[in-house]
Length: 53
Image (tube, rainbow, N blue to C red):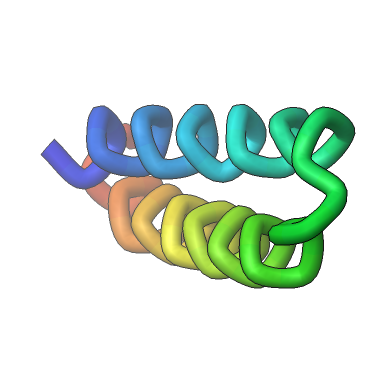
């Protein structure tokens, strides 16, 4: 379950980071949210690794 949430969170963070190109006014906010999603996703991936082996 953590692995699936990790993939979704990293995907959402990547999509938000990509969207910053088109939105000039909200770039800082979108980059902050994207970074938070990526960090949470990597943390979930780290929590899932012991269960994958």
